[in-house]
Image 1 (cartoon, rainbow, N blue to C red):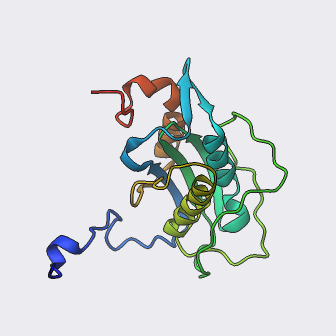
Image 2 (cartoon, helix red, strand yellow; image 1 turned 120 degrees about the vertical axis):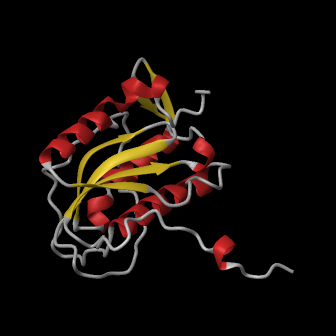
Length: 196
C-alpha cells in the first residue's frame, strides 16, 4: 500500500508564484504533445504541412475567442508536436466555468498555420474565462476530444504548458518573429524528437 507523500505526490506548478493570471496582458504560450510525438503534421521545406489532426488543432486555436471572449489571438503556429501562440487577455477579471472548444460547423481546413489575429472582434455577450490556464485547458480538451474520437491516440498533451509574460513591445516583437520563423528552424528546434 502506497502512503501519501506530499514531497512525492504533489505536482509542482510551473506558474510564476504570486502572479495574477486573470490580469490583462500578453502571454506567450507553448503547449507540447506527450513524449514529443509528432501528431499534427510535418515540416517540408521550412513550411508546416498540417495533417487532419493538425488542421483540427488549428481550427480549435482559431476558435478560442468564440469560447473565451476575453482572449485575443496574436501570432501563433501549429508545429508537428507543439503549439506556440501569443494570447492577449482583456477585461479578464470576471469568472466563468471552464469550457471546451467546439469546432465550427462546415469549416474547411487549410494549411495556413501561422496567423496574426489582432483584428479579431470578440463577442461581448459571453462571460470571459478567469485565466490563461482556462483558455489552454479548453483548447487542449477540444483537440483531445477529436483525437480520441477519430484516431487511436489517447494521450495527446504533455501535462501543463509553458508561458512567458510579455512585458514590453520589444519582447512582443522578438517573440512574434520567433513564432513566425519557427517552422524554418525545425531542424535545430529543441522540441524536434529527431535531434539527438
